[in-house]
Amino acid sequence: MGQIVATYDLMPESTEVNLESIVGTISGVIPNGVQVLETKIEPVAFGLKKIVVGLSIDDSNESVGEELEAALSSIPGIENIECTSSTLL
Image 1 (tube, rainbow, N blue to C red):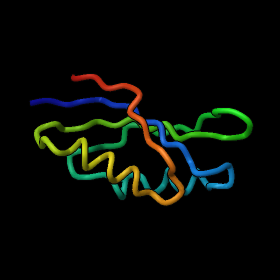
Image 2 (cartoon, rainbow, N blue to C red; image 1 turned 90 degrees about the vertical axis):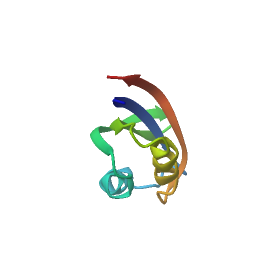
Image 3 (tube, rainbow, N blue to C red; image 1 turned 180 degrees about the horizontal axis):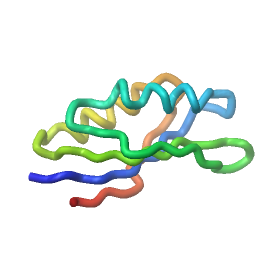
Image 4 (cartoon, one colour; image 1 turned 120 degrees about the horizontal axis):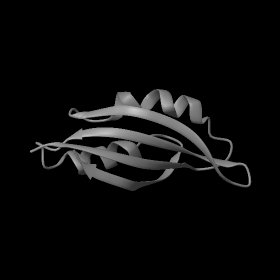
């Protein structure tokens, strides 16, 4: 198979969530075959910010996408995740 490059938006539960600490935990929760390429904190509206994560995904494991989304959703302080782009290399 190949490599997929994907971008995910991670939305916090509130404006009080420490996004820097969440960024530090991302690489520790993602499954094998996934590598963090970049992380950014971007404004959304009214003081709310989101984390944008760029990932490289080895798609030889068919369930890696489900595992990745479950791992990202399980991070304390994250209310919602959304894959905003993905492309096959």
